[in-house]
Length: 174
Image 1 (cartoon, one colour):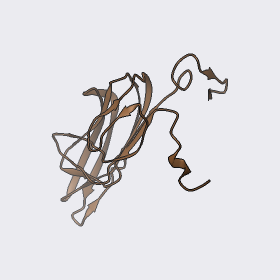
Image 2 (cartoon, helix red, strand yellow):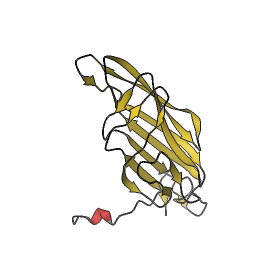
Image 3 (cartoon, one colour):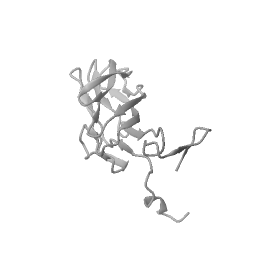
Image 4 (cartoon, helix red, strand yellow):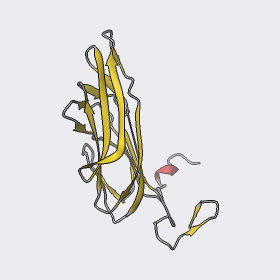
């Protein structure tokens, strides 16, 4: 395969993958995650770097698979817990929550909250997703570990309509 050929490839299924190259601080007040790097994004999503909202740009109604990952560190001796939850249109989603921790032994930072939050959610066009972390004590995300992937889940054909053919083995045919 020639070098750079994958730059011409575009995902057939609507998806977006973001990550943060730096760190973010989280407190007891809670903060929404932002991402400064866009790994890839189809035209179905609207996102600009360092924003906290990822919007379904076109009317791509259907189920989406959301995967969020992040690791945390804590300054100062002790333990800090992190509670992370997915929000849809500014409202927390029940069941879309994960807990982690970060600690410092007094001899240096240690990151132990390799948190993964995986959830499926029904979204309409113009809906937006946010991810919020609330900490029991001041904690920071570890650089390049805050990642978000949102991927459309085909149900009856690649564009979610009845025109697609469904293979008996569960594969989606076009």
